[in-house]
Image (cartoon, rainbow, N blue to C red; front, top):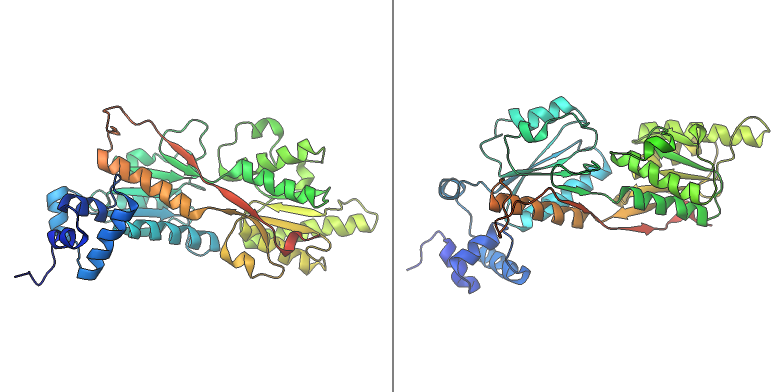
Length: 362
């Protein structure tokens, strides 16, 4: 007679695998074929199997809860990022616990060390590092738990990191504007940095600026303080759009200005603001100025004009992140691999594609 509450053995029997394989599949452990994992998850869903968290923690010392820390929730980029991470974590029968820092190192420290569940409930953590600076002692703060940083752009990695294709993709975005005939291109994102400083860029926006500079330099186009505008969100993007428009209008009136015909933005959020700022001054996109963004947030396909962008692979970012974290959790944060060797800090860079829309149309 079968128990009214399905057990792991019931799931294994339904899927035609061993209880150990069923357990590994449900816990998202590496080494399980995707087809086998899908079969086990289907069996668990059919039987309405639920992991007994208390019993599981007592037996394995693990909660299957992954702590995800991001800068904010109220932006298209972070909505897409947290959705991708949550989907990947849940697909492995793990549980996401997500919170925000509002770009505050103090809030990041609290999330890592003072959260009521810190040190007790989380198996590992995934953090989006942009804006936290380089002086936050993450490894010490999180009590030695396994963690992966997103966009931790150190020249020499000290922790596992999954990064966006910052330099390469922003170079491609700038080159797209050049290929569309733009010869006076404004760069919106990181504050201006001279070429020598860009050589050792260690954050996402600085790397994107370096990529844009590389494309401009190769094409013999201008790059100086007058061509770079600092902005990372809609409000600052609008301000940058106003400043760019005023330079264009001054040049048209024979005054001291720059006849910008293209704008390369370090993210889509800023690009939305730039387009609004240009419109406020009577300039049209793409007829007067072409604009391209970076990230590939969904809303960019619905704006007027629709936004050309670098569409990064969020699903790949989530997979790489959870793969790395799962391996650290599986082998303990002593980082020992199956062959007994210490796993060094690893870095992966996700893929992208350039999506051409109305904002850069000829």
